[in-house]
Length: 322
Ligand SMILES: C[S@@+](CC[C@H](N)C(=O)[O-])C[C@H]1O[C@@H](n2cnc3c(N)ncnc32)[C@H](O)[C@@H]1O
Image (tube, rainbow, N blue to C red):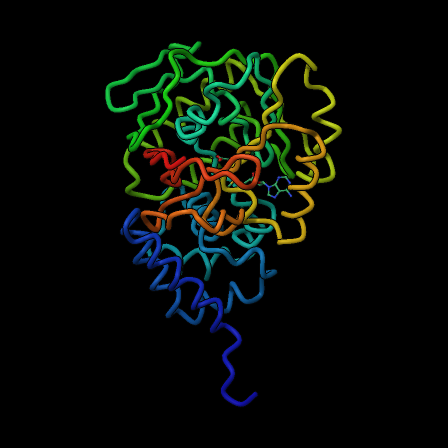
């Protein structure tokens, strides 16, 4: 087609990311806008497979090579002088941001379940959200102590009638599944997780360091596998007397609709409690559900049909609705 710009959809994707990132990281909001207008960087991205053109992946890979978050000048330099190394990191790595603080929004959904619990997380990355009982918690002054005093304290603002537990649950068994498990004890994996953080995001880097330390002291088992194909195989190891809880956050957005449906069927087949913490629309909500209170909100649902809460996407706030 005459006048057709093959990089227009990449540019639009970066502009959209820029709008979404601006409130969280002004530096990446500005950088994404600049990339959208930079023909050299767009051409570099256009030569990569579609799934490897994401802003998060580009910015993390540039940080990995530069040793610091990129600004436009540094990014142009890497694209101009180290294009093949940059492309190699983007091809080898994935967006695997692992946020321990999401445990603070998962914990209230576990209240009342018969203990002990068997926790199975799909899309577990390095397994930091499997260590739920190791962390301590601070819900606007309501504090709970975890099993590892050196693990981070997760701070979360509760809104509405959030069912806060009197103590942390007993976990009899835990396991994760990920297409590419990360190992907190591997310096390169730990560095990649740091590179995935955005500049200006407050205490996330300190929390990640502390959570990686907890994972090195108590390594969670994360099996290499797919969330549909390998679910039953891994779940078969859970002790029968424990309540099996299958959970995930920021994972189903990365799989297509068909796989989401296959996953829902596979969890139901297990008879497990299913907790989903995902961006709105990823798991359909009941028609009666209220709208999400903000752009940064995830929806916390149980068993694919019960809306429990809206959660800030990195775990710092929970608004209970059920
Ligand atoms: C953004 S990270 C979220 C990690 C973690 N759930 C958290 O909340 O911190 C998404 C993870 O899902 C994994 N993933 C994506 N598709 C998957 C699939 N089909 N099967 C298993 N894991 C998958 C990715 O490898 C990645 O580690």
